[in-house]
Amino acid sequence: MKNQTITVRPLSAHTGAEITGVDLAQPLSDQTYLEIRETFNQWGAIFFRDQDITPTQQLEFARRFGNVTPDDYASNLPLVDGYEELKEIVRKPDDPRNVGGFWHMDKCFMPDPDMASLLYAKELPPYGGDTMFAHLGAAFDALSPGLQATLETLSTVLIKSRAYGDGGTPAPGVTAEGYAEALEKFAGIEATHPAVARHPETGRKVLFVGPVYSDRFAGWTREESLPLLDYLSGILTRPEHTCRFRWEEGSLAMWDNRAVAHYALDDYPGHRRSMHRVTIQGPWLEPTSAAA
Ligand code: SIN
Image 1 (cartoon, rainbow, N blue to C red):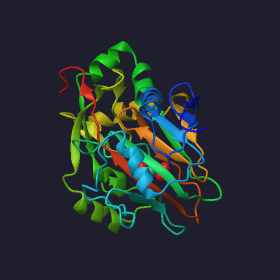
Image 2 (cartoon, rainbow, N blue to C red; image 1 turned 180 degrees about the vertical axis):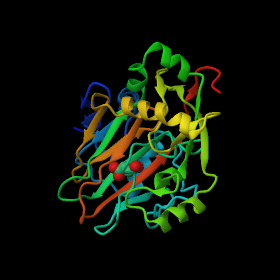
Image 3 (tube, rainbow, N blue to C red; image 1 turned 45 degrees about the vertical axis):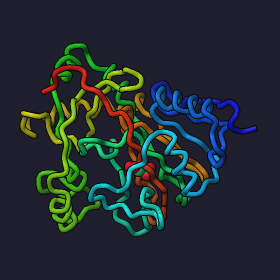
Image 4 (cartoon, helix red, strand yellow; image 1 turned 120 degrees about the vertical axis):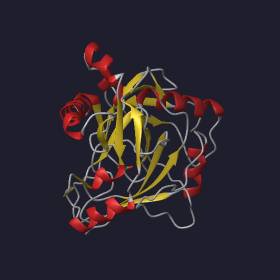
């Protein structure tokens, strides 16, 4: 009997847990919802397998957690036909690169990023295409008290177009024209967030620094910022701070953009992968001190 009690199986010490005993095509009781929400808060990324759900059921599940967000900025993601709030994350066999093939938190370059993202597998390649997650709280905990205290005084500037290139050099898989277009199309899409913030539901401090979108610390130059940003990215993505999710038909993943960064592996050239993504608004990270 589904939707009575959930079973939770962690994937690693810091992040990722598979939940069984849930049928997302059926309405969830308040108790089951609360247990899922607690697991989501604890692990930052949760996974369900063998789900057979429609786009409407995916949206209904997402709405238990908060308002789902329409495509409210100039993203390149196509919408699923007939659904304003459902985006298709697709890599076609001849695409030069996938979507999200680098460590990031969704929409971290916006002033009000989405709390969570919910991805449902529609078409999978015969191999590869896993998604990795890294815990921002584990990264913060791994730093020395001295560096933690310094970072609590800093903010980071995160820039959307960084995903397409840096300092005039296009990112791998991006042409010079594609980079120029992105610079024009995404001009001004950026935000400043505290480098360390408190998770509003767990109270845990997290390191909100993404390797690609983080351009610099506010008030610092890019050149000054890069060594420290690179160091922090290395801590965040230490294998022990991550988990890796292997998708199967019917898999659904939900992650907390306030607690984890994620990385969609691009290791299935010549094959197609298609997912449906919903993003959810909710209470955002809180500053911990007077960040610059
Ligand atoms: C994303 O970055 O939101 C996409 C993740 C994935 O396709 O696995």
